[in-house]
View (cartoon, rainbow, N blue to C red):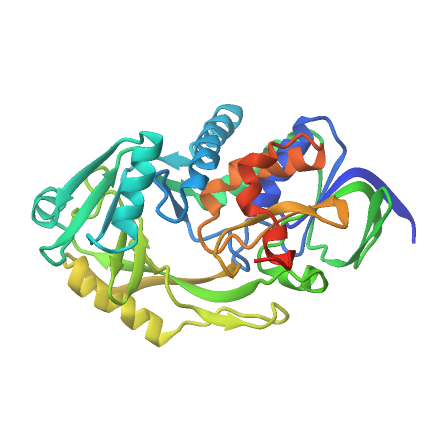
Length: 380
């Protein structure tokens, strides 16, 4: 089998991989990108029409600098391509005063001086007639939040990468990879490739690629829904993206998409998937019922009649923070994995960070909390 040689190979060309291919190609390196399917596709995690993007991060304030970089990255993508991928609809986050979301949003916003507005539930229901909830809940509006056109983001990154000379091979799955002292080799079902560096950005497929390295990843099958609406209550610009913390879990969505519906998904729950081999998305009646119940209580102007459904996957770490690092025993291998269902908004920045890890020019302090070593060190 003949061997093709590149500077960097990127495996997985979804949200992170497409961005990494672009940022690596910008540096003038010879980039090969490989994907099992033809992205953007519906088989992994980078699809579903829209993804919420926000900065006042209740999960962990250390993400905020990375989010600010991601915002700059999406601006760059729009300038470079002429495409609009980021819609600044704003975001309302709703939940109990003593929950996780409201205190966490307040904390991040205060620490990083992010613009937010806070309402009582009664005042919020006046401003956004389509929502409802207990009187003791609070509502925070994040002014600079919005949603990304997820498939367009992937396609635009890929087009920009290809315009800069990246070779992109679709429908070509990686069979195996191995490292040498200063290089890596990748075998697919068609060819063998050699490169100085490898970027693994495989979403749910990362679990099998990294199984022997002791990185604990859990795959969850998730569900996306679009429900019918009968008026303009949930249309932009009057209605923003939304995220609710409720006793039955976390629910989120984006404004009414004409011809498709009001998007809603449950951030909580999910079915564990042992392997991606032969996986097919299947609807889940229990999950759908939870979302319909949520609509009845919290989005009462919407219909519980389903207009569209899609499946996707979360690839989760035990602490639900990402893994963005090089392998300790193979620094020529960069991995971006375990985005845990909240990573797409970061992908414009994560691709740039992956390129910096390849070039050994990354600010390690900024991503230290995402280090692979937190799972590999024996000490607590």
